[in-house]
Length: 236
Image (cartoon, rainbow, N blue to C red):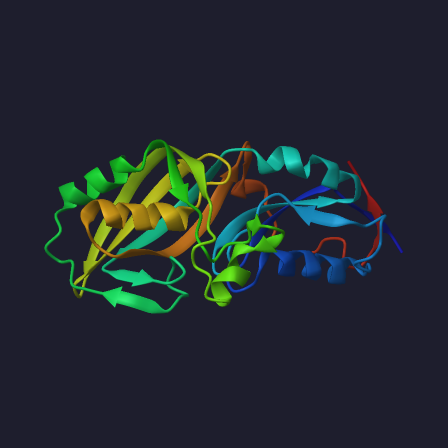
């Protein structure tokens, strides 16, 4: 059987509806390797929420040594923010806590709200996130009803640019592009924009398009497995 080389760094376009670790599981299955294999250890350079899509950097074998470096790189996201709705998770996957008509909000006020989150500011991390506190992920505390465990951290927004504003049945959807530093939560930015306006807000859609110099133009989908029918060797 013909050998097909697998790079140690693989760029994947994560689909909607699966976790970041599900991507690792799928790749292990496609490669036919056990999760305990040291030769075929895998990891990724930054989690995406289940319903977020876009760029993930996967390290395979020796490539896992570079993941911490990639984790610190700046990122770009395309986001849709829904004004008029607040949820317990900060995105539309959560339970709705508040819903109001926001049709009276002006476009200029929205632009001011977007500008307000630019720069480096200290914000609280979303409770439904994988960041660990005392060795336990925050989402585990949230499920236990312990909503006061979220730490504050610096988040950096280098660019927040509105692409379009859509009004629909008393709600407003803001499509925007964000260039951010590592560890910046777009769900938090959405809620902070709402706070600036004195309105509920939540994240509706999210797609990561860049990590450092890595972009979507070089990704493959999980359905594209050029090595599936060949013997596998690792490459550089």
